[in-house]
Image (cartoon, rainbow, N blue to C red; front, side, top):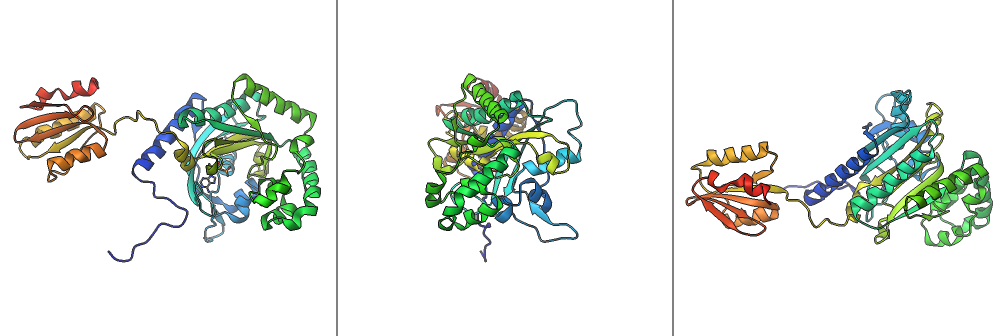
Length: 417
Ligand code: AMP
């Protein structure tokens, strides 16, 4: 082999069992979302750069230093999507989806995300997000709790783990502005001792300092003013109603007044979910309510609430289901050409009935082919050799023999498993 080419840093080839787990998880997330009345949406992988500058916020890390910007072609600057919310809200505005009497709009999505981050465990430069956006003129308590309970149940039931749900409430724009001033005043005397990112954030958006992961900075952050002390009476009431509803539904949560999220346009409730046994993976997913995103993007004054999961992290966190179904119902080992028509007909007939059937190369020896059937996680093996036909149950290792394929009653055995 000549010179080979490797994948770019921070990207993944999703292969074999991993691809299977990934796809199964996405399909389980979809199915649960359907129980909540969600419809699927797909938006472009790249958008005009200004969409993310406006929709995510120029002071965020995502837009500030993590976007993959495409080489200019023609009049427009394009960026590979670093998140979905801005693109989906753009699509809702452009396609006037909001002009419906049937509110809230409930959408779910899945696809690749691109962020120029430093790769590490569970952190990639291209990864996949699955998420939802619920949009309404005013996102009410029912919609908020539907969104949160879907978020929580997807992690708990699909991953089969004990999740930790963290919530915080950022308040309206007016109260946020007050809070930002208080934060700035608090950090000014400390800022020389803090990291470069924090120094930049102090001017651009002091709220983001709360998100800093640098150990020494966190010691300072711990004493910073709390956002909940700056909430209006109305905000406090809304937050309390949400917490009451979570209590009533017995959805466990912890409040974390330092939780802030990547987008500038979050207002009100924000939330994240973690795997208690694998905190090193970081957040499995997160989201929140955004009050002004639609209007910032030139649409109507609607609100939204949404979240996204990192699918690769969910795959890492998922506890394996021990009763994984078989990958193949029947694996064919045909050791002679004679009678191959009958074998092929049987295979086609079973596929028509919805059974999964595959086969080994004819040149492969019997022992090797049986090992292959095990590796392929087949339920039964059909062997055609000079002595006739044999059906082997790969779990019990029992084998029955016959002169014809019909005499083996393959369908009956598959049904009775
Ligand atoms: P965010 O949009 O930053 O809130 O991310 C939502 C979710 O996407 C996170 O909770 C992670 O599960 C996942 N995620 C974010 N960044 C990455 C990354 N660089 N690599 C893999 N997953 C990520």
